[in-house]
Amino acid sequence: MHSVLYIALIIACATLSSASDVLVFTDSDFESKVKQHDILLAEFYAPWCGHCKRLAPEYEKAATALVKNDPPVALAKVDCTVETKICSKYGVSGYPTLKIFKNGEVSEDYNGPREADGIVSTMRSKAGPSYRVLDTLAAYEKFLEHNDHSIIGYFDSDSHSLKNDLVRVADQLSEKFRFAYTTAKEVLEKVGHTNKIVVHQPKRLQSKFEEAFSIVEAAGDKIKSFIQDKIHGLVGHRTPSNLGDYSRPSVVVYYNVDYVRDTKGTNYVRNRILKVAKKLADENVKVRFAVSNAEEFRQELSEFGVDDVKKDGKYVLGRGPRDEKYKMSGDFSYEAIEEFARKLVNGELEPYLKSQPIPDQTGDVKVVVAKNFDDIVNDETKDVLIEFYAPWCGHCKSLAPKYDELAKKLKKESSIVIAKMDATENDVPSQYEVQGFPTIYFAPKNNKKNPRRYEGGREVDDFIKYLAKESTDPLTNYDRSGNKKSKKTVEDEL
Image 1 (spheres, rainbow, N blue to C red):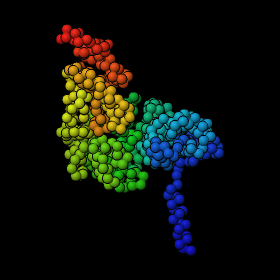
Image 2 (image 1 turned 90 degrees about the vertical axis):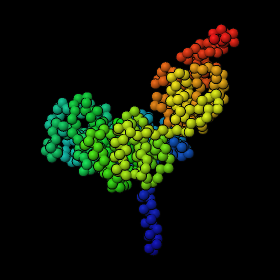
Image 3 (image 1 turned 135 degrees about the horizontal axis):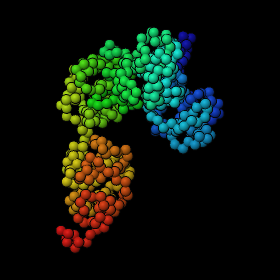
Image 4 (image 1 turned 60 degrees about the horizontal axis):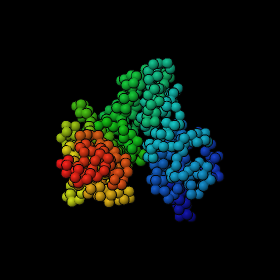
């Protein structure tokens, strides 16, 4: 009997632990259930879809956070391999497709972030006004209990001019931050703020190293920049959705940051980083600090050469004022973090460069890696056509023989270099935006800071016509239209 009860208890616990806050809708109940929610985000997916599988854990986390939102926001999902009628009705042709419903009707397609924090921020901003009015002490205290920052205006009247400034900023930033104001006398008397805008840190980020709130020392248009600069305090919790909030130079410590399951353990490390940040701030050393979850930022760590991300590992990376990359080497310690930050600010560190070894140049196409990029591409005596490719890219493989032929035909052109770079194994300079493969740029010798993206055809003749027209100096063997010159013409010009 006892064993039966024990097994039943285990099953019940397992069921509870696997409970999901994502609602599951079907053909038969979608229309009725979607009307039960003022606002709802629906994901139309297929179980075999890779993008859907990557979204699933982020969607679950977002659902858990948004069900506690005020007002709550529901997240639902529909399996389009089974529920074909409802997916057809809403024109689903790719997976995942996400749509926002308000009062049972489609409001808009969801085109926002696909990670938990971004989904939460976007849907929170869609759920109601850009700010809340806190009429009672109970409403005020509930607003402050939130896991994120609270920006609150305290005014002695509803018509105070500073309130209009707050509303204007809330309209601009409500997708990222939470705003409210109060004129309730019981609130003003308790907190001691009057006619001020105050940025409150959530309880999880409060520490003895800095105030739990900061008063906005700005007015008008400057309020927005003040909030953006100060909201994360001395050591912010950096997530995929707030990357743009952190100015440079910056130092980020990556470890098992988890403010859901292990706030105490997370803050054990963060508080020691706060001590370093406070010391440097008191000395007016201008550097931003943050903590990030190492697993969540595995891709970013790999860009710094950290490929083996250990569960209990701690990694320290930095960015310089011009986005240079730095990696702290040696054993982890808080003294080492302080020294790393000081040297970063003083320009005493060697930037980290992800690069393959410099190769021997045996072909007509010059092989560029990060370490020889300046020598080849930024050579101010030559124009350069450079292809950024990925070894696995089918389009790149198709282009390869044509690109080789192009380089062979132009090998006697002393003012032109045909080059290629594996963008998956080497850092690409920031002025070259590479978001797909192959991406091709033309870097003229007299303007290396502003390379031009090549958007022409990918046959050999297309490239030759482009280079003949765009080259800084006329080509030796081709006229400006890309036509091959006769041998006599070339000899006469020489």
